[in-house]
Image (tube, rainbow, N blue to C red):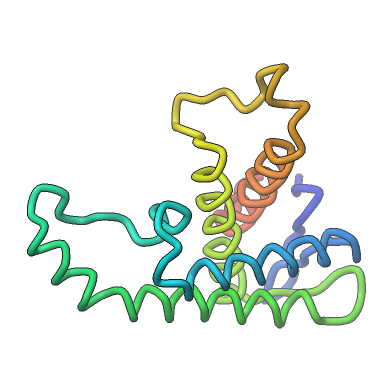
Length: 158
């Protein structure tokens, strides 16, 4: 059994994504690119660039100085890879394992930023009746489903 979004293919993974969904992801990835490259993104980027030494400001500043550029490059590389995939013609496209890993990284980053904006915690039930009506929470749930589908496909779960 395969997910509705992905199916296995010889040497890769087939992504079944309509034009509207591709457009949505492409637009969101563009917005994410702005957050990743904005040094003043603050709280919006907090989960993309987590604090490693919360009790040691000097160590944290040094870590961020040394690692920030590498983390930004990693995020931008994943975004570029997914952009390329989304631009391929046809309703279905085949991704290799590296492209799938980039897809997972990019979608997870989108979820993290949106979750930050929505103040989602691990204990939150995004299926609560009041939250289901919110278009932002619907988008968060959709991205969660996309991410889950990609991870299941990569792990070979049936």
